[in-house]
Image 1 (cartoon, rainbow, N blue to C red):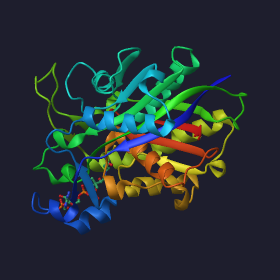
Image 2 (cartoon, rainbow, N blue to C red; image 1 turned 60 degrees about the vertical axis):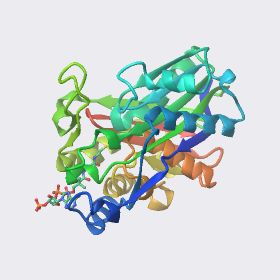
Image 3 (tube, protein in one colour; image 1 turned 90 degrees about the vertical axis):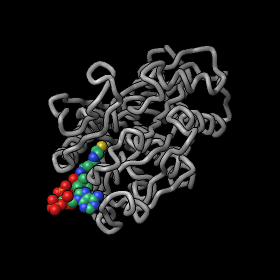
Image 4 (cartoon, rainbow, N blue to C red; image 1 turned 45 degrees about the vertical axis):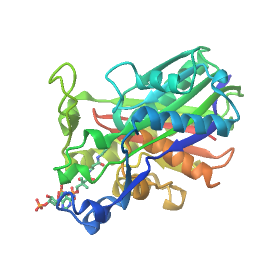
Length: 323
Ligand SMILES: CC(C)(COP(=O)(O)OP(=O)(O)OC[C@H]1O[C@@H](n2cnc3c(N)ncnc32)[C@H](O)[C@@H]1OP(=O)(O)O)[C@@H](O)C(=O)NCCC(=O)NCCS
């Protein structure tokens, strides 16, 4: 059977690093409060000329270089983002143009912080369905541009960046020892909208709007939703948490990551944590963490990697893949 195998990875961050200390001059907060509640120490913020598409294109090019491929080898670009350069065209199409690719097709996926999990699942379905042989799957965000910089309860949590994978169709045996995506589970429940949303949009206010969040409410649901969907992935694949080499969670908050790992019995030594460095980069956080841990040699060929995320909507999901 056809499997969608990771052939390359890449990432890109804005030039400007902003520490918690530096945020103290913008809003009434402290390094101590932010670290204690979230684990975040710094984040990267997009400056002039840096956009979701520019960061996404840089991450995509890095993934192509890592794979030893060019755009000529790619059939589809899928970009997960909630902070597109324009309402339309899709950021993926913008990235396609920046990469100099005029064949194939490109489109965006919007599932907020679960975006990359949705995008990998979508790419896997296209590859297994025979619609594409190779996919560039990107998570790219500039959340700094939709933050209310006077609201200390949200503006300290997020950052900007992008990450990408090249997924390639390869023949597998249909076993869990195969390389590639082994299981993908997606969920959403729109009744939770008011807990995490953006208060604007083309069809309502005609403006972009700002991110609004009831932090405690999100926190309350996060661990349960994440672990439920992971348990479903284990049940349907026949794999278990002991077999996981690396948990690569969405990087929103160290306490949520810690809580999920504990509930799943996965020791923190097997968890990739980048939230301290990047903050919450929404759909970009998982591919940024993957590029970090694959780049420094922690994630190796053959490792069982568990991706999970939860975000606005609510949306949530998990992917099990063998690297
Ligand atoms: C946002 C979050 C860190 C807040 O932590 P919390 O322990 O729930 O804190 P609370 O909201 O109860 O606020 C506690 C106090 O800190 C204050 N506070 C809020 N933000 C602050 C900041 N940046 N700096 C200093 N104090 C702050 C609050 O005003 C409140 O003060 P009060 O008690 O005088 O009213 C936490 O709720 C959280 O992590 N939620 C999940 C958010 C998330 O990950 N979202 C993305 C999902 S994809």
